[in-house]
Length: 277
Length: 243
Image (cartoon, rainbow over all chains, first blue to last red; front, side, top):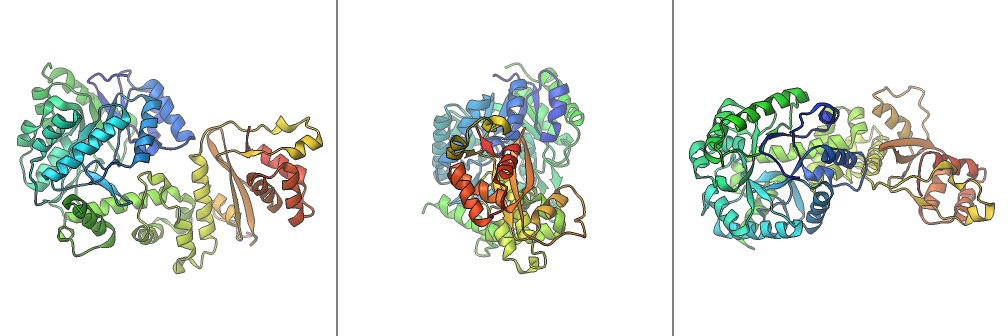
């Protein structure tokens, strides 16, 4: 199943009935594959029903591709089984790590972008693509900490990763905005340096001010998309053309029609502001 | 060890162990990672142990669960499997001692979760053993359905669990006794059925591979008055076996 450059939404189980009954014909949905790595039961049945009706994107959070070790073989097998089962249009992961030496940290963790790290990520992505039998895309993470010891800017690192591994990129514009705010860098300059030709999907989400350190923005996915993020999105569309765009909402999840209205706003921009590619 | 590996070691230690030696851990922003990871672990435990949450309240649950997270951080990215030793943790946690049924309720939550995610196969229908002559029936080795689980507790944990999952107060006339249940999944829904001690023993014997005749004998050895026919009918009725 291929994916036209329309907007999709992150699927939430509480929206299942509404989605199957009344979702627009061109809607696509994204899920975290980890939640469906089960032997059977209602959760897998629900995913099968979604796959029958909608193009799907599997957006992984746990392969830990920026670790100094290959991704877990069993986890890769589980992902492969899900891919074979639901035939997703897109498969993506993050430029981050979360597993190390038998421990799993349920977050997307940063690392110094050294030459050594690049070797690891290139090897891990190529290994993953080989095991999955397909290309994957990597998402730019959101940043909170200033790390020392980078040999590469993030955009150059990603461009080199694309060149060497043949992977695609998932551009999360909210992450760009949040990171630029937290690291005191320039979001527009980041986007202008981003290898847009490799982008297979765009993410849009809301963010929040951190409760303890109010100088930080958190990539919280619990609010409507902020106006500056919409502006950056228009900038990307005018430079890179239309791409499938996902509305992510993981906290304070509203009723489906409210998410679909946000999605409609993205669809209008995709139709009216994207340069032809 | 490479420098990336060393960085990951130190970072992961500082997430779960409050390590002060890692300079980055001193930054206010490091707390964002620590908090995000902890919140995800607590959300997972809360989702995986709903009856326990209902009994102790959300605040107490999350405070206690945070101690468990620090002791047993997740090893598997599938967080719906996280907390397989949480019942043991509760059993050994002194402040929970005044709720002697709590660890049993947690075990029942856990078994329900395992049942929910077990493989899909059909169910041996209640009538499918009809017409077998007694000898053939006795020689039969039935296979448990992958979603079937057996539960036994020295406390009335089944009654308490059921009231908790239904959002009801536990009846004041609760009889303090051992309770038994069979957990099954039919039509994609997990069902917890209270059963007699002999029914559970029969199920466990069949699950261990015994023929129906041998399973009946070993059950009768412990429960001489057990109505084996009714016990078996009960197990077939709830869909405990695979075809």
